[in-house]
Picture 1: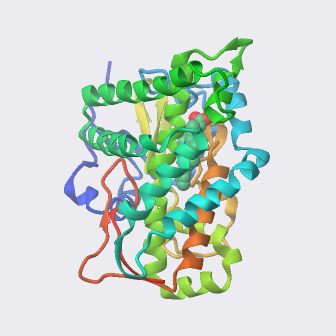
Picture 2: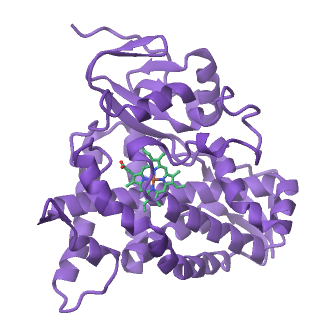
Length: 384
Ligand code: HEM
């Protein structure tokens, strides 16, 4: 018999949504494994989450009713698709894409005003993420605006819990990618790019189906767009809010990779991922039933003071392996090398092209609402 649960909290309340990070910190102290009708079980402690990430048999990723390659798969199916994906993000692939990545970063940063105000999310974060993703996949610039609009509507439908709208949005996205496949199939000599290469991949000796290809490319695109634009907003706000760090980054650019990982640890660009319990199991002092859903709240986990003392401060002496920015276990982010290269290229270009970034007191940054992380708006003053 199903247990009747009472809500420990309301993750969609205004109090939580006005500052997710602050609210998750408070919940982690009060009720670190919390139930709500909306998210079911939310996990906010580092130890609990590590246990979930390392036990994919008890905590399955098959939490979606739809095909989702490889995100909603468990081993052994998951392993067969990860083998296809990983080479696209290996050192050789990153070295091949690096000059293009740098050029896009410099081009986007070059659009900053010489001396004036800018809203960093719209002007920098979204443009950069869209341009990079389309360039990486070999897609035309005409897709930038439809993709920008799609991400916005997808986030709104997720917050509203509107399954019908989410279904329609998934179909819409499928249509966009199927068109990319059709265009290539109509060419005598399709370009040698990531999309064409993926179309020639095989699993168990057969070509990928169109449904598998579309799902895989959707997960790469969704994986990139929201997280990279959120990361740019978080990083730009951080340097503007901390003139001491801004100066240090201008003087010692070699510390940028560590600072980027650390800033995104304390202010998460990706808020959550899901699992489903495959059997009755307890986490912390709570008992879960088979079939119940778990939501990993990365924004809480990566600020757990039990693992990161002084969690709100950027420190370069932390034990790096414990930062779960890119996850851990079999689903660890395959796109992490690309994400790190993109963010480093952007921050290098930004530091080189500007003399000063500052917050605007009368127009403060506005936090994003779930499922987005980071900020909706980051108004800044820029001097080049
Ligand atoms: C700052 C940027 C990014 C962050 C913070 C991030 C974070 C993560 C995390 C935490 C996971 C693990 C999810 C889980 O355990 O359920 C993940 C998985 C994934 N990420 Fe990323 N990611 C980023 C960028 C990217 C990029 C650039 C791509 C691809 C172009 C990508 C593609 C994926 C995919 C496909 C998965 C699912 C892997 C699997 O299930 O095996 N991500 N990401």
